[in-house]
Figure 1 (cartoon, one colour):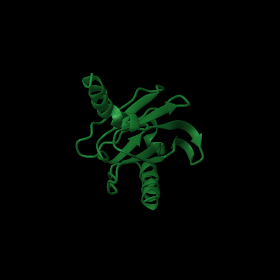
Figure 2: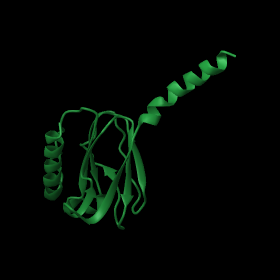
Figure 3: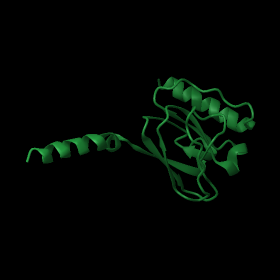
Length: 144
């Protein structure tokens, strides 16, 4: 009789971290409060294990990791165009996210997982993407 409560306690302890993880929603927009071709919000600070749900509220958008702006050990990802997409972020660090068709127009965002230090921006990014990433880094630093 005592085994059943102990087994239930063990199972609930194993699944407790998953129950505490949050899901954050990000809209992919042609126009938002920050201008044209944006993610809203354009930056997030989340806990390891949290999930981000990318919602293409208007057509022609996707969400993909930016090469060179990905923590060591994190796997790159890329969603399909016009499809909702969920990504769970387990590796602490700063992730750059891009809409591949609109990178040159600056459609980028940053996701900071855990208390990772600020990241270096890759020099190969288009000027508009560089400028938006720099502004997003400042917002993340100001929120510390």
